[in-house]
Image 1 (cartoon, rainbow, N blue to C red):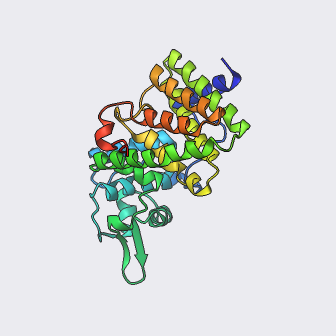
Image 2 (tube, rainbow, N blue to C red):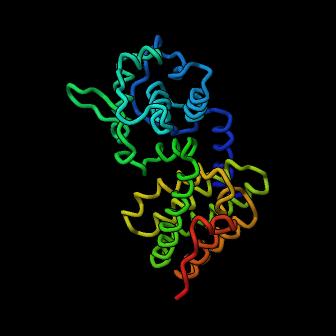
Image 3 (cartoon, one colour):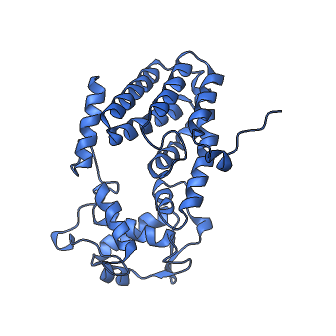
Length: 295
């Protein structure tokens, strides 16, 4: 096993145990709350609501602070429809229900406003915005939709976007011949193969995510690079047998290896074809994202 594979597997085991790895930072870089505010955030509907349990699972798994936890809870409630469009959000009420300070509430609402979920206006206050105003490409919103009532629509839309983005990315990448990225892609295939043999799904998924991120990076298109978060989110929330990336299998490793080999040889058509094969491993995907017609 290569040093890189060993490092990734060690990091994956640390993350799975709940220990933060080196360089792992809170997603929202706010100052830590005072000791008096460190109590667990309670859900709007009470500690036993399903939404509250889901929110606690999400925030706990990411090691978020109070700001991040409140963003997670409110974001889930808005996306799920529990807090409907034009619903007023009173900071004092939120602070009381979740037992956090006004500072935590204010900063959390700013994050949600940046995502397009809420708007704050003088003399009107903070209100939930309609779906048409949301930043639907935001990775958090993608995740909240994928694990909420809109899960089927979200996963279908993600599959359709991947079908559009990734075959184009590998076709472009084949013309660039970046040796550093080629080496890294080969490393990821090696790590995926080793993780499969070890039954290490966490390392497999991390190597898989980096593989696809590298492909978009190798395309040499900065606008495509901005869409890499969509692919990462899609890999994280797929939650069903949709593509060859959804579970560690020998077929999945083989498809990734074929993509890397095609890129290494500068075969743009072969790389694109291999990517389409990867994205349509399972028959049900063809009903979601039909293959292009032959003319």
